Image (cartoon, rainbow, N blue to C red):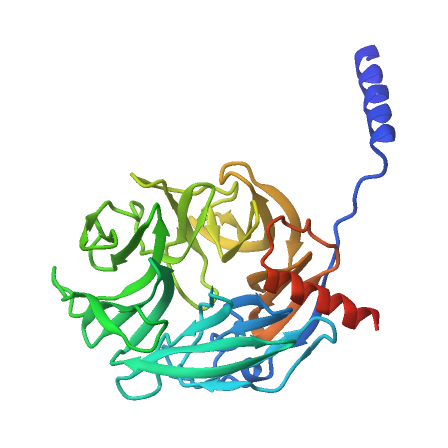
Length: 378
C-alpha cells in the first residue's frame, strides 16, 4: 500500500512538472470537391489522392471500373476554404496519383477516355495561380505512373495487352518505348502500376511476375529481386530512410500493405495495427506521415474498420500517433504546417493543430506557404 502511494506521488510530481497533457486537435470539414461530388458512383466520389502544390491542394478521384471520366481538375485554396474554377477536364476516367517533377504537378491518365491514346495532365505554377494542359503522346490503354530518372521523364502502364514503360529525353516533347513485356504464365494481359528510384536505378514490377522485378541502370533493363514478397505490386513509390518504399495496391482509397526495399531485398512495413495497412502516405523532410486504418477482429474470423489514424515515423520502425482522423479518410497531404485529409463523398478536412514544419522545403513550397499566410492575415 505504501509503495502504491509513493508511486502515485511520484506520478503526480512528474505530471505537474510536465504541465497539462496536450489535447488532440480536431479535423474540420473545409470543402467538398464539386466534380467529385458529381460522380455517379460512391467509389468515384472518394478523394483517393491529395497533393500540395503552389500553396493549394489538388485532389484525385474517379471510378475507372465504370468509366466515369473525364476528371475535373481544380485547386482548393486553404486561405479561403474554397475550390476554385475548373482548370482542366482531364480525359481520363480517374486520377489516383500525382507526381511533382521539375516544379510541375503531373496527373497520369489511369484510364484514358480518348481512343488508344494516353498521357497525363500537367500543372505549371505561374505566380499565385496554376495553368493546366493535357498531353497524350503515346498509344496506351493505361498510364499509371510518371517518374523522373537520369535526366529523363518516364511513364509506366500498358499498351493493349502489354506492360509498358516509355521514356522521354527531351522533357516530354517526344516519347519512345523503353520496355515492353508480353503476357505469360496464363495471363491474357499484364500491367506496370508504379515506378521507383533507388541508388541510381529505376525499378518496376510487372503484376504477373510475382518473383522478380525489372531494373534499369541507365543503360539496359535486367531482372531484379522480388519487390513484393507478400503479394501485390509496386504502386505509389517514394524514397525514405535510405529505402525505396511503396504500397502494394493502387485503388480508389483502398488500403494496402507497404514494403521497403533496401537495394537487396524487400520486407513489409509494420505500423503497429492489425493488418499493418495504409491508405496513403506522404514524405515531408525527415518524416513520413501515414494514413492508417485501424481494424478489429470480429468473432467469425473477419475484420472490421474501427477507425483511421495519422501516424509519423522517421525510421520506418517506430511510429508515433499524431491524430485520430475521420473514419472516412482515404488520402492526406501536408502543406507547410497544415495537414489535410481527402475523404469519401468528395470531402476535404483540415487538422486544427499545426504539424512540425520540416527542414528543406522547396522554394515553391515555401513561397506557397508564405502566400497562404499573407492571404489569411489580410
